Image (cartoon, rainbow, N blue to C red):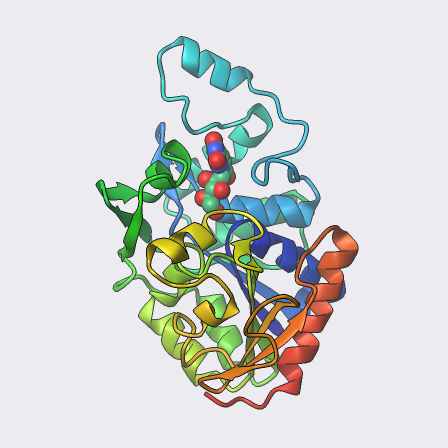
Length: 313
Ligand code: FO1
């Protein structure tokens, strides 16, 4: 049994590789919901959507989010009517947001809805939100505080990043499935996917019961670095690190994942390759996932590395 923590495009890619090499009963994918927000009366869960579409083979690879072969008639109409067009909801994607919102309003849990949507998309592996309670990431910038999607999509991550807070995380109840899996004696490893450590994994670790369960967990934990050289494969991770005065690279993961990870799988060119930093072993491999085969190779290497480690934390 493997638990994967994921958010964003890099997270979805490795989760897809793990799903290809493990049967559904041997993998649980817990996903960041700090990016979730309410838009045009709809509850949008971008990271759950990205993981679901990727595992379903429905994702738009070039864009990184949303569905392939998308059309935009709904957005064209929204724009013509003077509505907000900075966040694009595609025609093929729209039904999912409407149905999810309706079921949430009827009192169903995000966990149940997420599993149903994933199954309807043909995904057999369990995908769960980190919590059924609302957690909202608020980015602190040189221009003040911004709701996550305002910073990420509307402002294209341009404002200088000063910090982040996770509204509701302190009182959010953890995903019951995640907590059960972390306490399961059959658990072999926890894999933190190559997601943004601050924006995508930060919200998951901000839920106190999840952080505690990861610290107390008997199985080894490995993080896969999202950095290749001094840049992130996708997204603003490197920019954010620099704005925080931290050099981008695998070593930058040691502090946010302190007490949780035993090892970090980093890229071949990473300056920390081969080092052990604060008890965390850095092993280098080709972390770039070019295609499905690359996702599966990295998935196998992450599992093999994790099970080779003694739990040190
Ligand atoms: N990202 C964008 O850059 N622009 C968009 O218009 C946009 C729309 C969108 C709609 C549904 C969805 O599930 C995701 C969407 N994303 C969009 C992606 C998303 O907001 C971010 O990539 C994540 O929050 C960061 O992981």
